[in-house]
Image (cartoon, rainbow, N blue to C red; front, side):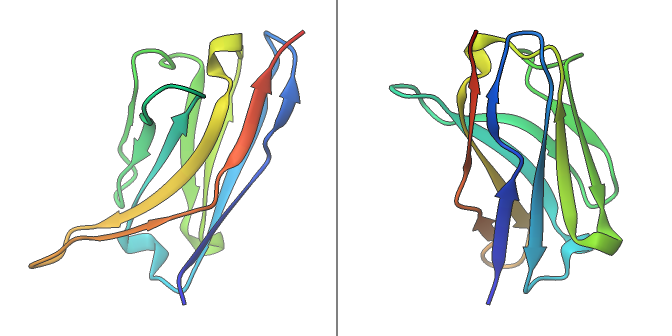
Length: 119
């Protein structure tokens, strides 16, 4: 059974930092691209950051220079280091594991963790 479990969310003041973790089980973690998405109330889900199985990263323009995504395949865990947080970063953050296969790609989701940036 595949599980992705996020942790590390919470309440932080503007300018503060948080590190989110996404621990995977039931998959060969190193073969999957890992992504962080977020969804704020009343808004569409947004792709925040992605790291490929090879370790290449991409970021949404809104978080470039502030967020850093990494992975530890030995620990089956992906991370999102979030610095200089802003109120507009407030959302539920979810991790996704994706692997291209024929004919259907595999996608798995965690349950999400709340991040609230407020003074």
